[in-house]
Length: 255
Ligand code: ADP
Image (cartoon, rainbow, N blue to C red):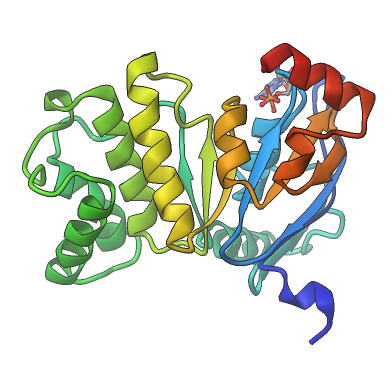
């Protein structure tokens, strides 16, 4: 096994345009299992597009995405449509996405929301899926709220259910797209605390966030995006000691 095989996530030469706008010009990075990668950068720099490309919610125009044994080479797509679909499905199954707004099913209970994917998508046994869901609810601080409906929960609790729902599919990687930006300020802390706990438990995460202080706490790797490229990368220390001028400017603005 060479070095690159050891990374759980590998992204190379990712490109994406929307119309005439080249949003991702050449994005590459790697991340190891059990680590937390934080994507930072100005609004419009392409952070969300990178995250959505990892599970092909956006289809990149070029580049390669690999998570574990599943990979899609967007420069050399399989000529057969059915083979392309199979490759994309295999890559998608490796990650779970937590969105800005939680998108819970309003007519299902908390536990109903958690077991929907495992039962419907993964064909898992209901009793087993429910037992796993109870463990996850405890981990996100919602033990005892199994039979509540989303509308009966606070925004922070709803987002914690959203996180548990992503984990219920047992993904290799959890992708979080600005998970606290839709919350009232007083609810942000409880959600960040849950994400920090899950990271400490060893979940592999890639997070887009504007919470720089939180990033300082949890990030094993920080990627600064600027104009569709990774302008600077490093450990959490780059947040306090960035080398690049545009990274310094960005941090001056947000801190
Ligand atoms: P960030 O997360 O850093 O704010 P995004 O990846 O969301 O950046 O977006 C980068 C740029 O791409 C923005 O200018 C945005 O308007 C544009 N964009 C993103 N998604 C779409 C889309 N589906 N259609 C058209 N433009 C898009």
